[in-house]
Length: 105
Image 1 (tube, rainbow, N blue to C red):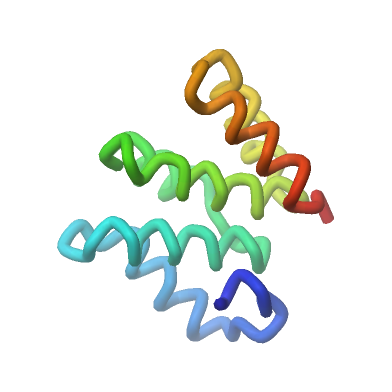
Image 2: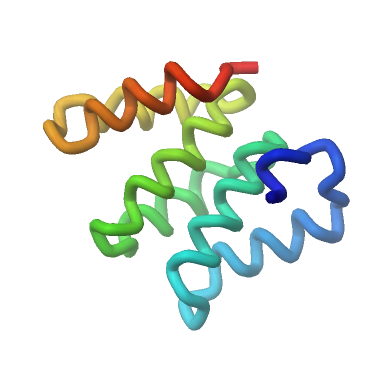
């Protein structure tokens, strides 16, 4: 839901989302959704995201790719990250879909 209304996310909520994203004791769905909300409000930071990506199980990675796609309008690193996923035959169609359906604003 937060990805649909990114302009309403307060600084306090962003802080909470960053904490959820980085909390290894949280479930992967909540961590991926926190990353997506931060991406939607242009507040997804590269270093914590990459750390999350490196430890994420493979089934969560499409959700994290979505978070990067949401962030790509404000973060050049997110565009490069998605480009680096293109050689993967499983991720390439997903990246095509994300770029076609999520506007780069």
